[in-house]
Every structure is written in C-alpha cells, then in structure tokens.
Image 1 (cartoon, rainbow, N blue to C red):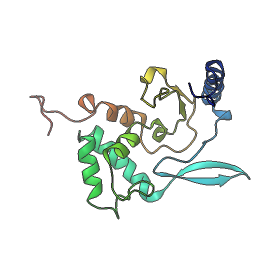
Image 2 (cartoon, one colour):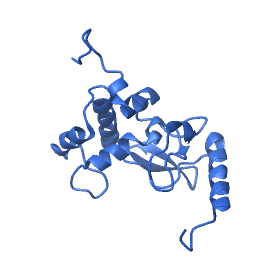
Image 3 (cartoon, rainbow, N blue to C red):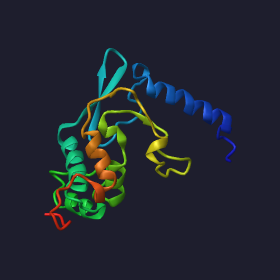
Length: 169
C-alpha cells in the first residue's frame, strides 16, 4: 500500500458515507466531471447539475442501441463512430473512437440517471452489479433506460428480435 493511501478502515468509512449519500438522493449531487454526453449546468448559486449535451447525448443513445438491440461488438461500434466525427464527436481531446472509450460508455450506469458507487474495485475492474450502490431516485436526466443499459451489458440476452430458428433479422 502506498504511503499516501488511506488505511482500510478509512476507505471503508468513506465508501459507507458515500453509499449512504447515494441511497438518500436528497443528499446526492452530481460530483466531478460529467461523463460524455452531459454538460454541467449551474443551478441555485454554486450547485450544479448534469444536463444532456444535445449532440453528444444522441451519440450515447446510438451506442447503447447498437450494442443492445443490433448486437454490434464494441470494436464495430468504435469503427462505425469513426466514420463520421462531425456526427459522432470523439470524447475529450481524442481524435478517434477507441474500443476502450465505447466500453467505458457502455459500463457507466450514470447514463440511466442514477448515481452509483462501488461499481469498480481497487484495480479499476468492474464489480458484479449486485455490489453496486445506486441512488434511490434519479439525480439527473437519463440518456438511456435502465432496461437498455442492462441489455447492453449482455447483448446475447438482449431485447433484439429473433426469428423462430433463433437467428437475428
């Protein structure tokens, strides 16, 4: 453990406080930099709220649709986004869409409008969904429905239409 890192009891306490705040949405704010597709809007003095950014929020919706409904792979989605940067602007200062950027969007539960904690472990790996702590109420406007978010997590069992023989149209 690095010298500056807090002890395990302190980390557990911080996680417990954040989990309490997350489950009691009156205490929840939209902390930090907003994810791709959102921008920060100042409300009531110094408080801020995430609000959908018109052009990029549509990109997020397309990504979830392509993954959950059409069953495209993360690599195919990145390639499709790279074809037209005017329509699908890459995140941040990136000049191209990477599969990692697409995967990061697809695993961000905040696109459902809820805040979350405990989604990743100490190594940055995604934890099982049963260990996540979600806010009791939405804290900002959703870009995708929870059903579409979960369908995108496992497109093999998604909402895609199937024919009688099991193939997709």
